[in-house]
Amino acid sequence: MVQVGKLPQGQRLVLAELSGLAGRYGTGTGRDVDHEQAVAELRAVTTDPVLLGIAAGTKMADPQGISRPAVELLAAAGADMQVAEAHAAEVRARLKSQGIRFDRR
Image (cartoon, rainbow, N blue to C red):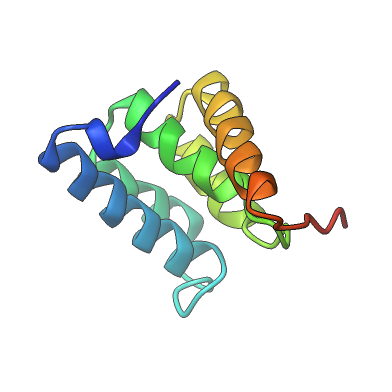
């Protein structure tokens, strides 16, 4: 189980940057940017498969299910998808315990 809050500050900052970039290029204002350019920008932040996996897992746990393009970019950048699946399960469990429902499109 990854407790993001207990990661070193530098790693938490990397996760924040990955989240922003993946969101921008996956579903945000940069969604029309070339796929390889978007992946390269994610890799420029980090090539650590665990951090990429944590970021992908957070996106996978999106209750509305609209973050799939961001997950795909993080996977292409080298995310450890086993880490992503495990982290997504943890995040979903926390969200469900708070009464948040998931839309299964």
